[in-house]
Image 1: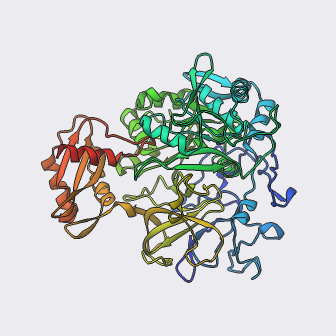
Image 2: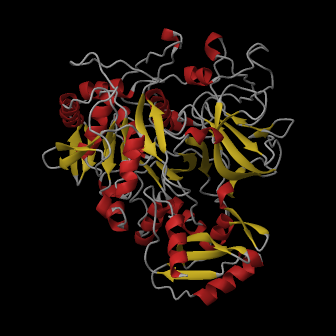
Image 3: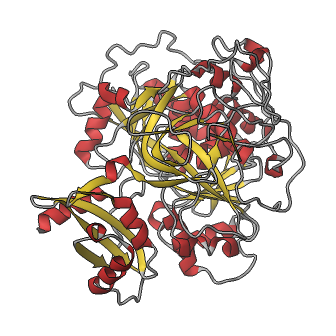
Length: 625
């Protein structure tokens, strides 16, 4: 990376510098239609290239941007990536070539949301999936409990589910989808995408009253579930507080509808984890999902014959890569059975038996694997891409990944449900960071800013809140009028994009690298001193006897807040609170040392997306007194 004169970082990626992109297989390119997007001006997917058979020598800092991208500098500053194509279809992104000259004149200084979307125009998921069914109907689309499900069979199941939607007298109303992960639940989501129907896909582990409130807020009057996974039968339920009718949602052509891409139509409605408050509904447009799945296909070489492990629940945003990008590009999704998801032996066996090539998971997954790692060199050599995401990985776990996956490229991928993936960093296995992993560079079309507390843009080293704008993001929370505080304009008005305030505090170092420091909502005052809870967690996580930790702030009349640490120790450890307090005293300021510790051998409570459930930990602590 290089720095602009004002201290901003400019990603430097040149054509041919990174050849992990050189294989793109699967269906022929399909040009999607976009209103106002110039018709045939939409770009197609790259043509297939030669297969990659070995891992190139990694660099210390590598951009997550695949393909021919030049450095891109917005007029106002920040981290930016974008296509190198300059010309009539460039749409007003100010690009800077490596020699510093502007490729687009002064008249093209304002970037709009439509600009970025046009540059990253994409293939329709449904059309791509249909091409896969026609092109290799007997090829494996899923593996479930050791048995393959072909593209033909998955398509047949989806058509049966689509017929279920047509027979229900609900018009074009959104529906709730409530089912555990299985081939039939995947087929049900496929049916909704084929029908271009909005659907809310919440975690099935949420409390019943929370689920019903989410369904009502999403406008769902009915919920569809897989009632018998062995037969593929579905059942309907009326959302309490509604009459189960279609209301004002009408669909005039009630017969068989041909599919026509509609990039602005909402399909997926996901929910946030609830780790910082009640879950929020995050609607995603068809175009946003298509742009992301196209990027993922190029970045991770997805295609026919490529197996991808899916660890996360169907409702988690990681499935946009694991399941939907894989199916779009003709690959095979190896579904982890939810009841076996915490068995390291089971997970390791899946990787080996099905020759998985891409793994994306939260750190807990890799921790489970390290416990059963037998140091059998080459057993996991089929894996070519290992993605760490969702949380910070402990150094003692990170150091084992290169040996466990000897043929893989290692990535730290940053994102959130509202924006999808935003930044990517490739980890050098020969020079592993000893502290926090860098966040890396923006993905194609992504813009990122560091913003000070006073709302000004930080251009040099220091810490600020991360604002991002991505081509994959939601337009806002559904049913929450106050979401405007999180989805904002550029602080300087330099472009017409909407930025999401992530709430993450990010530090820019002197060398330009970015690291996650904590959350704006995890800043508390302890005896009058500002303390970052995640800093305390980060220190505790380095203790060799701690498997996982969650620190919460408990209100106190005298101190303002006191800290409580909930920890799970590794098996066989004799760790106690006295030893832990002594460890903290050597590394933390006095006010940052937790007042109370609870050490357990049981897993800590987690949210539906696998994050530590700090709200529950804090509530239990207050109950215990």
